[in-house]
Image (cartoon, rainbow, N blue to C red):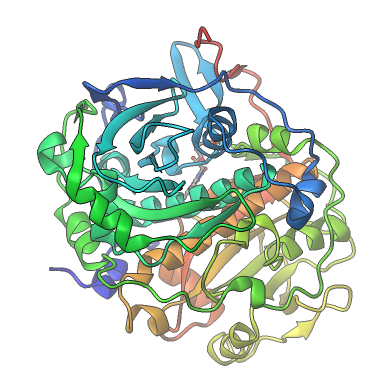
Length: 528
Ligand SMILES: Cc1cc2nc3c(=O)[nH]c(=O)nc-3n(C[C@H](O)[C@H](O)[C@H](O)COP(=O)(O)O)c2cc1C
């Protein structure tokens, strides 16, 4: 069985060769991005599109909001703003849906579940969310349970959906998507005045059991789901501690309903290494709660000034396909606000994150007013600063930026050619205001606890979601970049060992829209 370190090395792209993936794709034969179960009763959620009278900057002041009542309306809004459709796009005969959460290649490997023991909300059981129809499928009913008033959201991934296009590297992308979804859930919950608790006490086996995804006979063999994370919705300020043993015990007496429909598409290629790494990266032990990010210093924060409704920002989030290479530079305030959002451990994206920051940024700054173009570093912790100073190229200047002390200039110069080449020759990495590489403290986490490989990617996904949304708030647009030449990035940064590895890239700039592509409303097809 492949080790995490071997999987990681084997799935690196390089200038010489890309990681193993399909040689050909039949675009008419894509896996269905919408899973449905046969035989389940449906619970229709109220028509999507509800508004909450809160601006983005008000949303960020999480503590001031009073919690909304937990009702089918508020649960529906939470699911919509996290996993729901945001628009349809049409180009000629092709039509595709976009969602509030992004996904590498728009393949959407994730599936979302609601586990409920709050009988005023739903019959106590497990429900699968279909974003296309904005409804819940009743997958399981608890037979014996305590009315504990719990509402949990669980996430899983169908790795094959992603592997269909990206081959062996797909496992990484699934984890990044799971991180994006986690941040999206936190923002949506905050909008309702709720808090999310990432339930670390569950092993992956328990998550699988609770969501019913370990019932292998009810899934097409190659289209099974792997557990990602499970979160609890704290919809009151005074909620009791979560009774993990009771809920796990309740799964012994569950009435399961339905079987997963096939996702279609011909399985032309097999990537066995994905299921091997997935097995090796399972979380087998109950987690400790570690150090809460909210205990991290949140100095040097620049507040958001965005008065646009938060629901609008969330629903309008898109990936830029192209940037205007001739757009003016962004202001320092805009740039520093985006950076400080990545350090704002008290803002919604991070309030449920139970670990110390382990991902730091190296930025290719192209166009920021009054800031020389060059390579910069934003360590997200004191430990990160010290270890990056030891690990990166010893010739780097580490000049603290006067106007934003958390940022360091490593190297002066035009980085556009590097940025583009390193991100698989994608012009989006060079034509924007800046792009960046997310450097994860690698060996330190993977050696001790292999499953943390996944959570390092989740952390990158969380940062990516912050960047996507913050870019929208200042009239810019972002794009996640999963395709980059791993070791060439490490070489440019002078990394000699695996103390850090680049796990995700991101770019922000002034988006050029393709007028040939039509945008259609998200849910015009619903007759509710
Ligand atoms: C993990 C991840 C990796 C991505 N990698 C790339 C990339 O390398 N190049 C690119 O153009 N877009 C990339 N994207 C953007 C996706 O293609 C985009 O999210 C998807 O098409 C859905 O569109 P939307 O973000 O506008 O909803 C990535 C997105 C994610 C979440």
